[in-house]
Image (tube, rainbow, N blue to C red; front, side, top):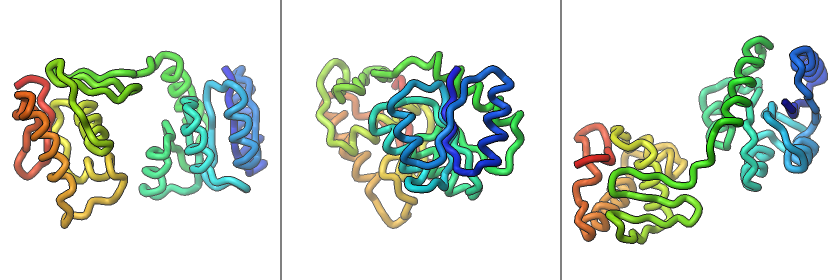
Length: 225
């Protein structure tokens, strides 16, 4: 198993390299963001351990650039930035896990091994099916009851999120943050507008009851109705 560590603190580098080497892992290091991104995109790694605050290129920018190339290497963010907002930013940028410093190597190793196991066994999802709804993620083609559904980009993202969480009640706050990537503003009706548009398109194909409003809680995409 091959691990890439992108970290600029020499003491931390030595500590992690020693620990992983003793466990039989092949570990390579980069001490700045540019070097880390270059290594990550030019070679194969089973895991990347990535610091947030790096010289030359911030860790989140490294992660965003990596994901933009289609690289799905599991990434464990290791950072002194421990506030919940920072952890959320890291995970939303494409991180698979987030640990804060100071840390215990035993926990780092367990989390790293879990991510590497997941990366080996996780199939690439190319389609989602929920009842009469089918979504092809590569072509962005959506059908409802076998009939093509034409969606705008935000409608597609909204429906994708609902399909990924079918039969769950999803709050307006969570939908707003997941699809629009903003903190929820209770004065906006953008969620209601887009839900209404989806419903109208569903109604035209005879599936008007597929999205359920749960009063005071949010919305639910029903798998059966």
